[in-house]
Length: 333
Image 1 (spheres, rainbow, N blue to C red):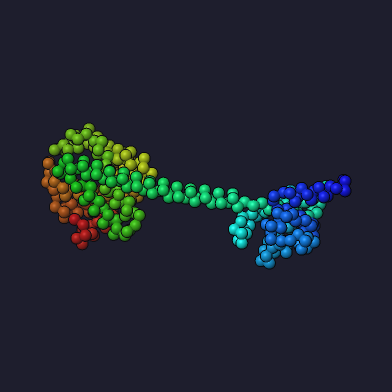
Image 2 (image 1 turned 135 degrees about the horizontal axis):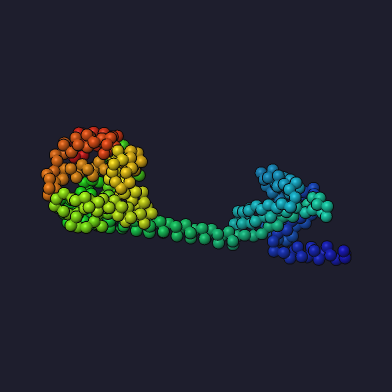
């Protein structure tokens, strides 16, 4: 090697914009370029020939020793640390790698310090932008969700208003179902779900032929089969809205029976969504206490007795007990 080679190498290292520190096998600094001096707030004249630990706060000496030991024992490995210069509000990425001779013996280490402040700030700006975008999307989604629910509720009311015998049915079902749910759950997500599902439980009737829906007499077998489709239509209307998928499932199953003889899937017992079991009671109570062209309305007491009689067959016995208790206390009915 020519005598000028070390000077050429030093000139090259000094010209590199990244900080370069070279450490020998005794963990002593043998070289630090100008960039490293600026990044580390050190003077090469003072630190060359001394332990690298002098470049670090006392509290980090244990970590530095552990890192250097890692480089000694783990051949071919490097590691990276990100450090912050709080005085200058700068961020640096320090890459540590071992220096080995031709026989793979450890003879020192090299620390390369790269200023990543601009990159870090871009990442922070991007993260802030994405968070803002996420919040705006969530806000817009919530707004769309609210508009959809309001539209569907208005549609149900308009549908019921065509028939004086069913007008206000969904609101009455909702009032009863929510009171039953809140008796156990209080103000909770479960009660909120019952509230929403009960208001929309008959939304699928928008797809039922009007002459069948408002027929002033008993339905034929074919007509009843057509009416039963409203639970499937209701589910299909609500399912595309992600936040309403659990509500859609409740709407699908609010005509199931506790004994498994309901529709559309013949679910039995606790396999039926709990909110659907609550709505089934409220729905039946309102149907029985509402007049129809072909029959008179039951008295509230008679309807409550009928629901109690069918506990365990048509209705969930536990929720029936809650309903009957609230009825006799005057909270519903």
